[in-house]
Length: 154
Image 1 (tube, helix red, strand yellow):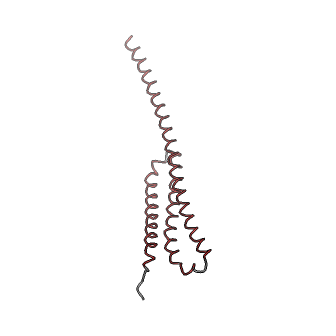
Image 2: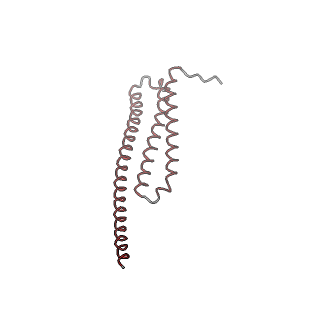
Image 3: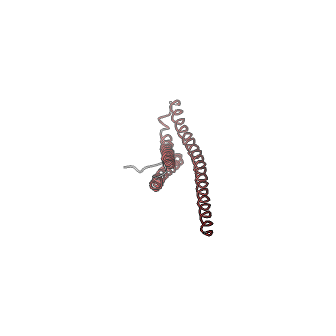
């Protein structure tokens, strides 16, 4: 079996592809592990559970698309002979790669906006709960002060 020879001009595409694929795999694995760790905490909060499920779905989709792009870049580089005489096919192939990259960017922006909106909503809910608890403490203290005053009068 002849030794595997890699042309010097294909090395950059291979490096980029391997890095993207590796990043995608590690990112997907970390997302799954993170979601598993949150499962028990999210059982009682349907809003947080829905947000976390959608966030994981978006992030796994981005990881998957980056992995596909990581495969398509070196593959497209190796298909140079196939694309000779087929400029339309060459164009379509690389447009698909660019569309996947653009979709990944849009999904990342959507994830950022979604996290920002959820954070604002959660912050509003926390402030509302805090106000309700502070009001309950004030009512309790007022009722205790009222009874304490009556106890001293008797």
